[in-house]
Image 1 (tube, rainbow, N blue to C red):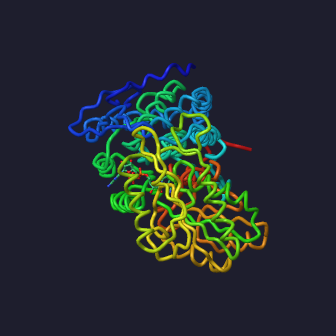
Image 2 (image 1 turned 180 degrees about the vertical axis):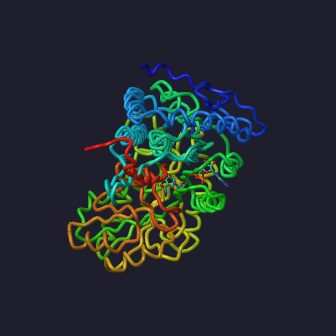
Image 3 (image 1 turned 30 degrees about the horizontal axis):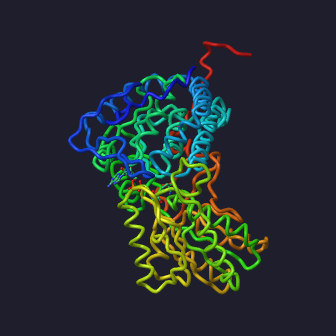
Length: 497
Ligand code: NAD
């Protein structure tokens, strides 16, 4: 078992089909950028329909043998994969930073979170155990077992090029399915290395395939009769579309959508800790996280000192290339996305919010897609910046009189991914926990991302489906239940005492 040097070729990014790289053939291409320099580093195929057909066919061919492979052996592949990922941890983190822009520490943590899912997959023999009731009637036993679905597909977003694919395929594969992954066309490279390492860990050819493309390739996956289930993570309108389309074609689907996350700061909060949490949540990864804080609900007289401390923290935040030591925030993913975030800042000014810190004024060397941390105060709940997902380094402070008003306001959001409270009061924390309409709740925590043994549990329009990603939900999503009722009547052929 060797990690080997990364062999993902440069320039025209290949697919990964049937256990090896495959040259792309397409009429439409998209440049892949290093967001810190603004340079195009590769091109990705957007419409290689032949490759998709071949990937699904390879996954279909590989399914019977893989599903029949004893689960202990499938789990051992995951044990070996975990070791290879650990050996390649730094290299994978650099790959994430190069294509996404987030700082190396964040990228390293992202890969670590992905490895946790592989550890969950390695425990599959325990989690996949069925249930039996012996002698439910005279001579009758009932057993319930989990069986894989067949070929399943994953469509992933740009913002976690390693972790989000790893939310999906390790659990799907260890449960006995085969997989076709279509990574984001904006961060397509890291997934190839993840697939290559899994082959090195002993995964048979065709069990995991990676096909590049955009919306057209995703639509072809949703239409494909051989794809039994679809896992999607991305923006809300696309999540809803994927959910409706896949369900109408009788596919199982889980679609994790966008977010607008509210953090409540109580007057009794430890201010320094709250500011640290808000800054790492709101500005970390340039605000391009589905768990990023976007709106700060400042309760009572905490507002003035909180806004002053957030402004100072923004002034001191080290923004620059993610590979540079000590950097705390990197660039946005694309120039167009930065323009979109700037559009939100303009709307905040137009609608009457007070711009306390203007990230547009910060100057950066080179052509990277940088934008400084931005802070609004006196935001109203009806403003665009308080309602829509910005996905950039913009924090909006809304001043509220008490905890009840804070929770009521947060609950008007269409989204329900995460919410946090900063307080020293157990009563306030418990009230918040019990009344906030969000699936992942933080108490004095900036990014309340569940570890892999729990589900990634977004609510409302942040999630379409029934079974979430990871945790036991992940196993349930990727398996069908089979209930077998057996009767062995005494026909006299095999006498027993
Ligand atoms: P996106 O919706 O643009 O793209 C996600 C995936 O969908 C990509 O693979 C893309 O190629 C594909 N796609 C695009 N248009 C499509 C269409 N019409 N039909 C089918 N597939 C299509 O999302 P993004 O910009 O890459 O990622 C950022 C978004 O993802 C944010 O909204 C963020 O909140 C969300 N996100 C959510 C979670 C979560 O757990 N809820 C996690 C990470 C990111």
